[in-house]
Length: 177
Image (cartoon, rainbow, N blue to C red; front, top):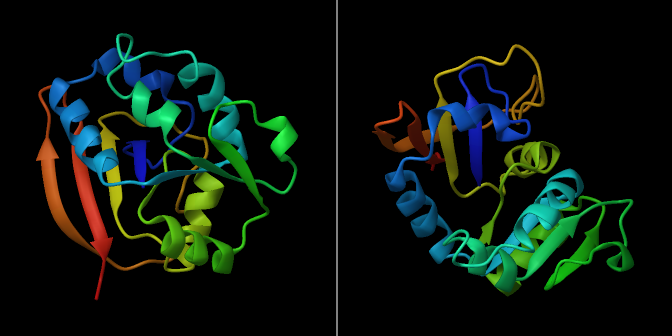
């Protein structure tokens, strides 16, 4: 799971990250994260934000474009149908079901998750989060969606912490045990 997150835990549409720029080392880290993933798991809102943004990008626009466009995308949504998803290699799984996601992980392999606060809450609560890659920006937002609100508990070990030249800190947390 990958999140751009503020100091106060907000992960809404990351336009607030633009002022910090994108350190090339962040791109290297994200490339390493996605390189081992065989699928992308997204919630409805994030899918609807990503589809128009990523579906038209090429490798010349962004080196991450082939991953996002060529990799199979699984959308967790109780309201969308396959007819609603127009981005290539996308399918709707239906409403959140931890058993279905466990089976998908067993069948497909490692899944990449970005944004998708509601989905992330469920994955953490159900012990389905293997790695949390938090790119923490030195800013507070005051309000907005948070992946870990009250009553979503998880225990993690800090595997790595790295600061980039733009002030962003990458925290890799893995489940305890």
